[in-house]
Amino acid sequence: MSFRDIEYFAVLAEHGHVGRAAEALGLSQPALSMSLRRLERSMNTKLCRRTPKGIELTDVGRALLAQVRRLRQAHEDVMREVEDLSQGRAGNLRVGAHAGVMDNLMGPACCALLNAAPGVMLTVTIESNESVVSAIRDGRLDLGVSILPSPPHPDMVQEPLLKDTIVVFASAQHRLAKRRQVTLDDLENERWAATAFSAPALPLLSLALQDRGRHPLRYVAQTNSLPFRDQLVAHTDLLGTSSKRMLRNIQARHRVVELPVKDFSVKRSVGVFHRKDAYLSPAARQFIGILKSTARDIARKS
Image (cartoon, rainbow, N blue to C red):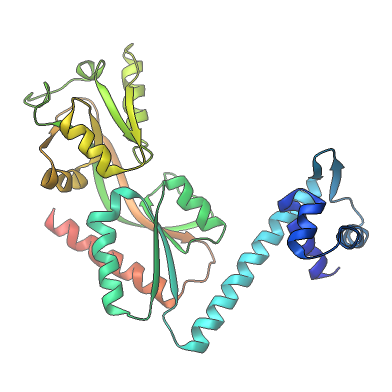
């Protein structure tokens, strides 16, 4: 069995087409087909079958592809570790973060890291929880800083940093803004602004209404920008959800208020996580320590 044949198979599987895979590898189609046949003979099994649109993996082929991807990640981890050690540097750090943790947690922590370790190359992307987890599994990110799932993902190591509560907020001019108490029934006919980062609060709130025989939430604006969502809520009669800590930041920019909604309470835990057995560069380990310190400071001030 040749490792080169295995790598060629992985490229073929990912393209799903002999012609496109051969072009990507810089091979002729007959050479790629010969490599596949050689690999199948060495394993004594069929790895894929041809279809009118290209190729389709067998069950064995899918299992082999999953193992090849794990080997790739392990190889990349080894190369990064050797490079970091040989050059005596802190390394590159790729972090995926939930938008709701950027101001309070990620901002101060990233500044502290860059001040303490000028040699670090830091890349931060803002993504949904699901996208962050997927990117860490694929080796495209080193760390995730986001809302921790419950139960935890079995292939991840996660460390809690902060606990927070999700609240409903509205413009200070909203008809419900001065209420001492707002019921779920009061929210039935309201209009809502949602973001890709609103989960799981809005779906849970919608389910709570439906359990009471009420209509689900009515979303009239959706965006992937939290600042834009905040502006919509502040200057219309739309409602939104936010963590209690994040709402303080919103209130520094807009005239919005928390609505005291009875019988609705969503707690969440924010933390840092990474793939089990993944290589953590010196920069990643240092950043985890800084995140913990920053989280303790935030908790003390709350």
